[in-house]
Image (cartoon, rainbow over the protein chains, first blue to last red):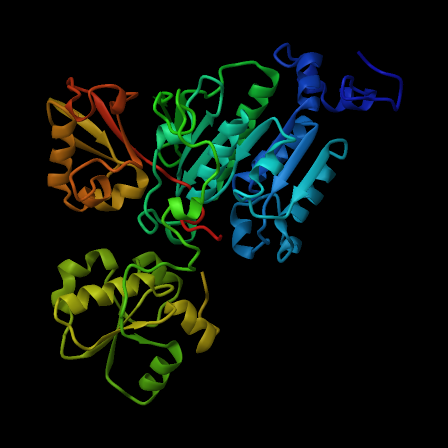
Length: 390
Length: 97
């Protein structure tokens, strides 16, 4: 029912809103009733990056009455390959601020609250309490377990989406009789076992597709139409362009959402995931290192150093120190190509893979091998800025 | 029987970059064993040192989680698809806490 011009409440749509959302209103699946539910909905988006971009855009476009955006990060140029909420002029700005600006332009009628903070066990309940639906657009395991546990404990549905390279997973956790994240994965992988986007890369469109599916699921939960992904794990492979679906069962023994929950308070999630906040927990120790400056000095001096590059061929094409390329995974089979009597400096992009290479070679009896600390990135910073960073 | 094992992206590097591997097996346990015999690097990613399936890796036969079937004893039919579904989070795998 239309109201007088200029007068609109949450229980009614103004003439302008009716015009804006007309394409929703003329569909029986949404209609005035559905649009009013959307206007009265309160959705909290955790993360405004790859997944958060389409999420924020489509939920704002749909007219979700109250949107909360949680992110403590700052826009970086490497984000722009996929985080389409931001523009080049936003580099350096807090993500929540840039996101809110863009979304308020898209839809000035909705309420957008920003929380330029990290979600933690200390603030999760406080942040969640004003919202009905939580959408998980985060990028790390500890936060995912935190979002899950807090959602279940507060009885809020959690629209989950996650990605890796060109594969995605989407489902809805936290529904009254539905499973939660711990029903699916009781424990996280130990750090270092699954590469991050920075290490493994990600197809830019992938979080766009997965985040949009999450927005669709959030809207379906709000209007109460269609079949939500409760108890269903949707798997998406962008390269094969295939969707598959697996059944997700609620685990009666789940410590958080089972019949006799043993976890009733939020825990230290970093500890749970085996991380204690170090920048780069390394599994290798006592690796002999050489800095980029030292290596440059030795090479300029004419020292006979064999530079071993353990990155992948496609990385070599981006930039290289003209080292001999043996990808880390091939090193065991190709170790005979190396001369252990020569001094070897191994490098990769940032120093982690090459540290593993050095450890392997020392184990194989190589005595004169060192790791280039900080990798080719450090070479670019300290020695030759013309070497591109990636 | 001949069954197909779907290899998830994070593990394809250890399975000769293949997205699926055909194995002969009568149970899920046999199929995983055949898989890790063919591709030994997969073993430490799927199994912990005491030989148990890692808890951040789920295994499905067609669309059912084996934890709700007979786990590794789940019997297979010809043409079944086994899916290995590991936990993924995108972004970074260490907390900035």
